[in-house]
Length: 197
Ligand code: GLN
Image (tube, rainbow, N blue to C red; front, side, top):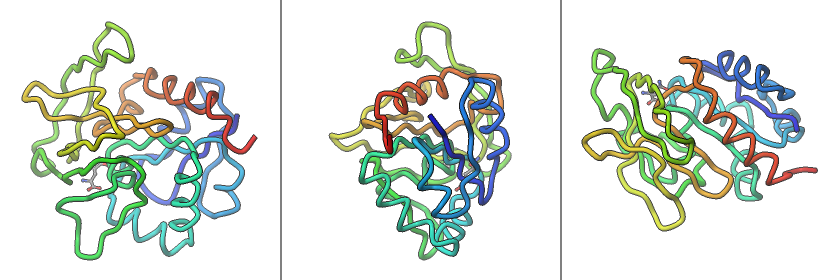
C-alpha cells in the first residue's frame, strides 16, 4: 500500500516520518498524477485557508473531491480535518473544503495561539491507554451528521475526533507526540479499502 501525504503546506514531514516508521511506502502529493498513485492520503495540520487556496491553484481540489467520493481513505489532522469537513464555520471569505465528512467544524474554536493546549483523551476505538493530544489553534467538530461518528471528546463534551467509513479526522496532532495509534488505525482502513488496487 502506498500512502500519500498532501505536501503543499503544513506539517507534512512529521506525518511522513510516522508513516515510514510504521512501514508504509510514502509519496508526497502536490500534483494530480501523484494523487492518482496512492491507496490512501493524509492531509496534515497547517492553515486550512492557505491549503484550500493551494489545492485549487495546483489543480488538486477537483481530483481530491472525486477521489474521496470514490472511497479514497483520507486522514486529516487539524487543518486536514477542516479540509475534510462538509461545512466549515469561521472560515475566511470564500474558503472551501474538499468535504466528505458529514460534520461541521469551527476553526480556531479554542481561541488564538495562546489558547493552544495539551491534554489526555480517552479514545475507546484505540484501546485503553489515553491519547496525549496537542491542540494548536484547533478546530472543534460542532455537529455530526448521521453518517459520521465521534471517536473522542474533550472534558466539556466537545468532539475532537471523528470517523466515517474510510475517512478519519482529529482536531489535534498525533504526528508530533510519538502517538502512532491513529496512523495505525488509518492504515487498517487503507488496507481494508484496497482503493486503487
Ligand atoms: N487554525 C488552523 C486552520 O484554521 C489549523 C491549525 C492547525 O492545523 N494546527 O487551518
